[in-house]
Image 1 (cartoon, protein in one colour):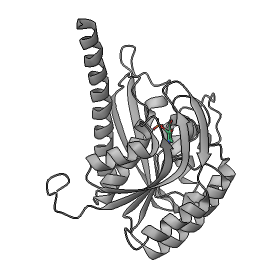
Image 2 (cartoon, helix red, strand yellow):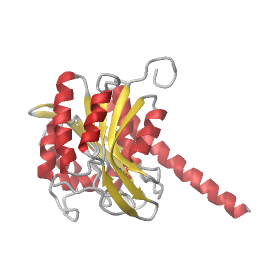
Image 3 (cartoon, helix red, strand yellow):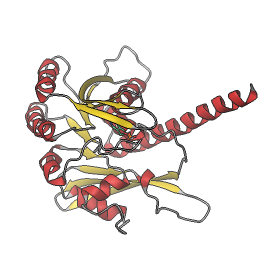
Image 4 (cartoon, protein in one colour):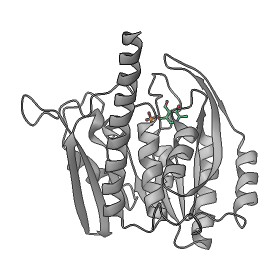
Length: 282
Ligand code: PLP
């Protein structure tokens, strides 16, 4: 059903994130992922960034008036099943986003919101710095938040050097901010070494079931040591948004997303290695 019938109407996702002119992260990752997973992607670009594989050079935020016009243009024409949010470039954008999501969620009760909190570019450099107090009113509008290990510590107001490495503890703290579920990606958790020979990557999903109970899903896989991970966080959130748009339950969407990202990281590494081998042969 997911990839087979091309005539079947594709679900629509909106991605509200930044443009990376080097093509790997942000909107480019969202469109490529959505195309692979058979969803239609409408893209509202929050910032035009200038970057390459060695540095972030500039970030030019979009005016909220333009974003508001885009929502108006798409609202009835291409209503979303899921909205994926990535880079929010400044306070004006977050205030606009809170108002927009409150309104559209009241009109589309089944709409889901996936938020990937983006602060730093993977090449280094600050894309956006919004304090937790400014993000707080967004949280109750978010169905799934997908921080990496470092972003999770920041959301919990733990410092990045804090010795607290209990992912479940962090996930519980993040749920208390008001979102319905959190997935903490373990790829940036340098402390995770179950034994001396193997380094693993554990992703943790905590879903709120009621004000007093929650359910935990954990997925562990061998860590893929690759330098070709630029855009993998964006792709993770947009793959999750795509699977949710195809009506998968969160736990299943989480499993499929982890498999999709692992495969992408492996293939990227193999392709680059093949190219390097070919060049050595010449
Ligand atoms: N969004 C934009 C526009 C970016 O440039 C980046 C990284 O450089 C990100 C998001 C986050 O990227 P990643 O998926 O590598 O975490």
